[in-house]
Image (cartoon, rainbow, N blue to C red; front, side):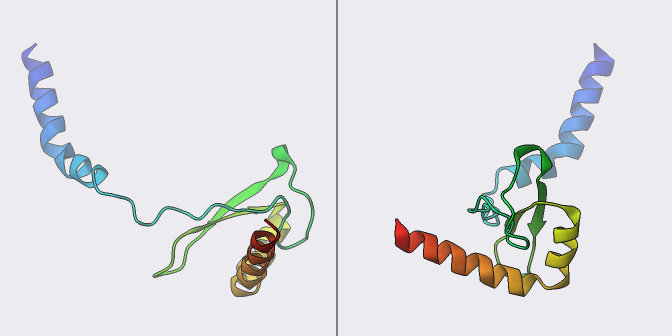
Amino acid sequence: MKRFALFLLFLLMTGAPAFAAAGKADTSAPVPYPLQTCIVSGEHLEAGNIVVFVHQEPGKPDRVMRLCCRKCLAKFKADPAKYLKQLDAAVAKAGKKN
């Protein structure tokens, strides 16, 4: 019992910063991918074959990207601004339809 109490005390002492950080609000929640197609190839995303990637830029929210394959991931990483611009345009266009 004494060992358990010491172990618990150790966890509380070393884990206190982690518990404090966990209570803070997450202001950098990723923006979900709103399309049913790969932004690079235009292919429909199939449930079992999706490559999920979180694109991060300083000062901007993280963007969740759903791509159809690793080749498209490589193309996205080579020029993310191009594909993010296309994605934003597609989202804006879809928003106007609704």
